[in-house]
Image 1: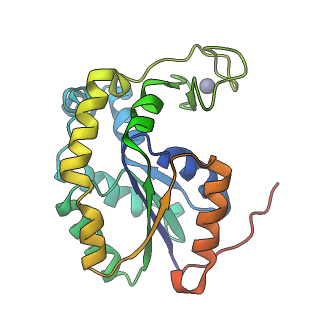
Image 2 (image 1 turned 180 degrees about the vertical axis):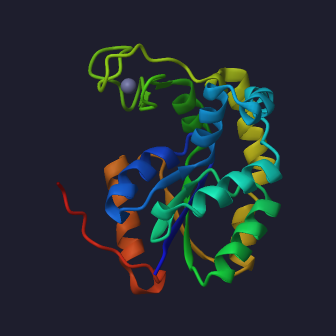
Length: 230
Ligand SMILES: [Zn+2]
């Protein structure tokens, strides 16, 4: 059985942090469209050049581009037993396409909606820093590195992501409100399995344990295994 998890929520709702914890538990890859697109931008390839301008304004990258990126990624060997989608789908068209893709393979996904207060989101995004070398995310308020401004893992100076600048944050949140939030209604109408959780003031670990409980419940139709370390 394929364990498919779709993490849904506003930018800054903690999808990436939860995905990082969840991927060890499910032993499934974390597939983040944002990370994939930023990787292309870093590489400076044709796709990267094309999406850079869009992402810097906070607007959503075109459906065809992300659809193709996700479908290619889902075809890779490590995603066959399961995957965690983060940042996809973001539009109605993407959601329909994904649901058809899942249905045609008999995969029953679990959509997890992380609900976070708007003001908390803005504060979180403004405090976010990323290591340009290894990609680890930090937050100056909620998840600071051990030494200020420096990555715990490799000592690299942390940076503000281009799409985490204040004006861009507002645009990203506006795009989420108008194009992505309505997908919750879509998931409900279509009878997809949806788990909604208030993630405003839960620690990532508390969130993980609740999500794991949901994944492990028989209704979820997902196979949960206890995390094995080492
Ligand atoms: Zn680093």
